[in-house]
Image (cartoon, rainbow, N blue to C red):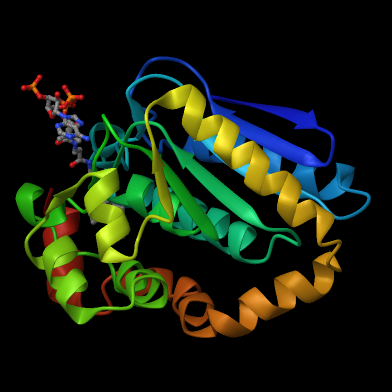
Length: 242
Ligand SMILES: CCCCCCCCCCCCC/C=C/C(=O)SCCNC(=O)CCNC(=O)[C@H](O)C(C)(C)COP(=O)(O)OP(=O)(O)OC[C@H]1O[C@@H](n2cnc3c(N)ncnc32)[C@H](O)[C@@H]1OP(=O)(O)O
């Protein structure tokens, strides 16, 4: 699950435990509940840092749980899309302190943050769908295009399922900065959070700017459940057979 601490006006949300933090509905609910607390407890200029314990930030959807039936798949997809919308509309700067692997939906969770700081020595950003035999959902693609500026990098990340280390992520324009290890990454994230808090921005205006910037993504998040995440029956039929 996750914990939430407040250090001054910087909130630290941590995915706790040494498992691979699969985005099962229960974990998504726990993160969403923490974000509701952040919204209610942030009385002035604030910032959110998201990090995780262990060698994984999040290894993506809990496919074992999801593939029991299509209703579970749609529930997990709906909850993740709502969490993404929560992050995009959060009235404060968000920082992902990536101290472990982030795969597929876990990578999407990282990409939803305004800033990405990552440890140098361990951890991949890995859009693994091609390797595990799934097309990426339409809204994943909208997020990738909102957050990553180069079609050559889209190809590497999505069409080659590259395992992107922190240092390569900086070169690709995905990661803002890299650090020697977990402690250094967290320290840098807190320092950045405090700097951003000192700018004393109006949270509503901050959220408004981000919503405008990512309007294409927000529109795709509301995709109609009946067509699932793919907008075409073929892909959804395949999924429902799994
Ligand atoms: C229609 C209705 C709606 C549908 C929606 C819901 C339905 C779902 C279907 C939809 C599918 C589309 C969208 C999918 C979303 C998902 O999330 S699906 C789940 C995706 N998850 C995965 O595929 C898991 C991927 N993870 C992995 O393959 C591995 O965990 C890993 C990331 C590759 C890490 O490997 P692992 O063995 O687990 O860990 P390590 O031992 O730490 O690393 C392996 C080796 O790599 C070395 N290493 C680690 N970091 C670095 C580094 N930074 N630089 C260099 N090397 C590194 C590490 O030392 C290990 O090396 P060895 O010790 O030599 O093995």
